[in-house]
Length: 153
Image (cartoon, rainbow, N blue to C red; front, side, top):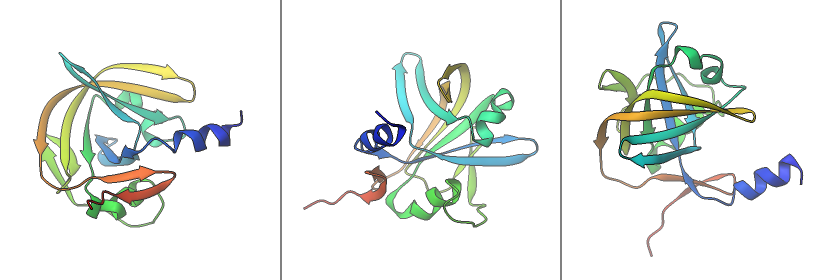
């Protein structure tokens, strides 16, 4: 199988969209991540996957804490900004447990890295969730390499 076939097969798994944020080198950095999952309830752990081509991967040794913002359907542009699909400044952050997160996201998490694992061309960051803020709304979805919304008939 080719890389393209593998990518196409994985695009058939619908995911939510998150923006992962952290402060390092004196600035807030963020990236769109759809490779995000819960790992454990006790302790409360999540995992994100970082591509080796990303700024986060290259600075992983500096990232001790990070935020995860699960985006709502109205935040497609936010996802595109942090995925570098559109060029636009973004400064609509708030803090959760002193970690920058996206303002008005569906849910935000403040996390502390507890382990990292090299996995092919990615780095998995395993983190304990320190704080959560829940909100109401619908998530933005990513399926078949396109943004989608939940439709209730």
